[in-house]
Length: 250
Image (cartoon, rainbow, N blue to C red; front, side, top):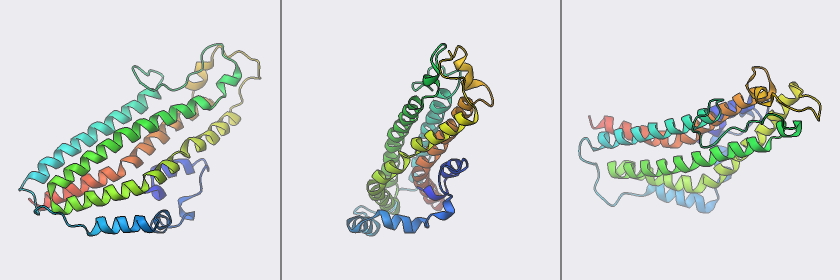
């Protein structure tokens, strides 16, 4: 994953919540810091492995397999984008995960509480990880059936995924914490009524342009979509490799 130059980092850096990407070491240097000696041996073995079976697949196999996995990639991405946008919309329809909406008449302490938004974000992260991890596994399986070279690439991707998955979760788990800072910034920029005021129009606080909660919810959706694209990058790279291999056979 290109954490250092992803759209997710640029969005989070815009409100000055994270350091600029240029202040970080280059990706290769940071990757080296994440791997220990046993990880390096695992990656070296995967990189130098040779498939036991025969070489190239039958002509046209890569093309057929490539079309199938690209269609599945589009379906998965579309479903996740729809889930995010619908759940962040005022007209949520049948969204499984719903954006927190203050009820009429609730106290100000409920309106300014961040915890419901944190749970909302974490729920979407769980849905993304489940769907994309399953998709990535199936794409690797497709690569393994396509050719010897792609089977080797799939093995390398599996080894790298296994090594970095914990680090990935740790990094992405900080996103809701950064959003909490943004939540507090926006509420300070748009002061709420004094404590004890009944919020009969609380839902409108989220929808009116310029209001703190409305701005935050819009940014929250943008961050979720950017994280989705980041999580999809490795799978998209595998599919691109499969597409390039199919083009060589034409």
